[in-house]
Length: 162
Image (cartoon, rainbow, N blue to C red):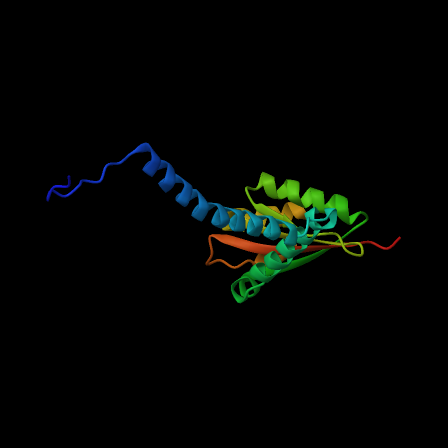
C-alpha cells in the first residue's frame, strides 16, 4: 500500500555510475578536439633552420641600433673627431682601446672596413688632454670642450699606403 508520504530520493551506486558516464560522454569529445587543435598548431609552426639560429642577423641589427643611437644630435654636436694614420689599423685600434682603459675611458670599436678602423671613446674631461698627447694627437687638445664631465672622441685610423 502506498501512503501519502513522499518518497525521498536516495543516492545509490547505480545513480553515481550513471552520472559519471554522462560526464565522461560530454567531456571526452571536448578533450579530443582540444588535443587535435594542439597537434595541428604544432605541425603548422615551421622548425627553425640553422641559418635562423645563427647570431649574424642579430649582431647586424644590434650594430644598426647602436649606430642610430650613438649618432643622435647630442653626440654629433659634442663629439670630437681625430684622424690618425698607421701601418696596421687593427693593431692601432687595439692600442687605442688599451690606452683608453689606462685612462678610465670607455672605447667602442667598430668593424674594420677597407683598412679604416673607428673607435668611439668616452673619457673624463680631466684626462682627455693626456690621452690625446699619448695618442699622438697633442695638437687637438685646444679643441676639447670644457663644459662637460665626459668627452666623446671619435678616432678614425686609416691604414698607411705602402
